Image (cartoon, rainbow, N blue to C red):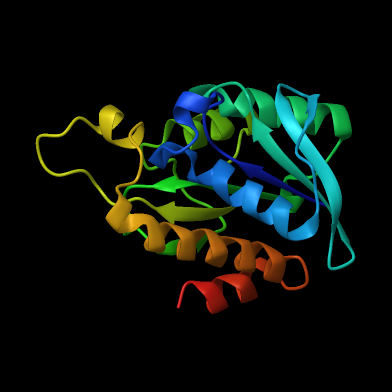
Length: 186
């Protein structure tokens, strides 16, 4: 079984913001495979199903971004799942909008959701898909930037990035994460 955690903030006011691309990717993956992310468990909304014969659990923490680790830890402890089976999907300012980067370990890089997961799991070693949102123009506050929606001119880039993220997740279910990185980090 694989458990895939998409990071974001709950509530309609955040739904279309840059910080919520992790939620957007999980929603698209759920749509592709007829999975409903609607069960409330472990401080999260959860959807269970199968993708290509592999059991998956799609998890959207409802703790707000900065406390994402609480939801991850709660799910881990309750269901006794292994960190090796985790993939975290989230926004990354150091990756260009429209691009994805896969990593299997590393620091939080200033991302509070990842920082919280590292804190609550005690390790930096877990698979991740970083979805690019680029950096704001100089002088723009980072918090305002990540909590703002994508501009219309980036809609196609966003859509392609969400599709690529779903493709990478699907590929990773049948291949090692190293193979997935080799294919999708291009």
